[in-house]
Length: 205
Picture (cartoon, rainbow, N blue to C red):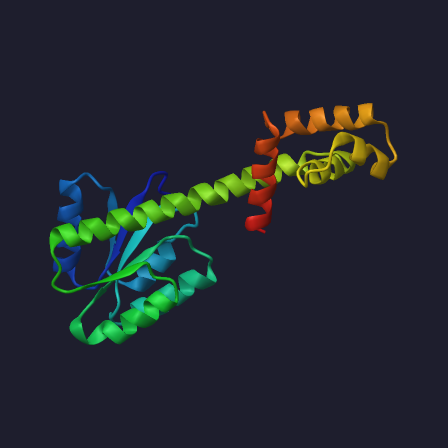
């Protein structure tokens, strides 16, 4: 089932650990799902899932590091918090080099884990909003005709209507019409809005 709201996904082969984390999350009303091994999680995984993953680094079968690598290959956006034992610190450091947001040593304090989870979920939410913003920006830009796209590029580069008209070989009035259409199609109320749209397209390109 697809999770339509942020959720914490717990993957640990030790049932007492899963239960303890689950009870902790229940106490603060954070939705969660539990998995006994990495393969079960991977088989259930859906790209639409939101939230974060609390993942044991050392498990029978597929390890936490191996699951992390599979999720990287799937371009999964779930931030990962690794649960590690004392001897797993070098592995945890390697996991963070691969993009894990944090690791936490066993035994951990409840508040420490909650703080890390809240941070990870905030990171995921910000990433999701950036992706949605980029998709919206691309959709708006794609709605422009080729001529409107030319005007958009020149206006957001600081060219005046008169200069645009000369360089494109059209009247200044035609430039004004195209510019008005660009503003309308991109839901922009000002030149600053247009510039922000262009910057978003460039920085996320």
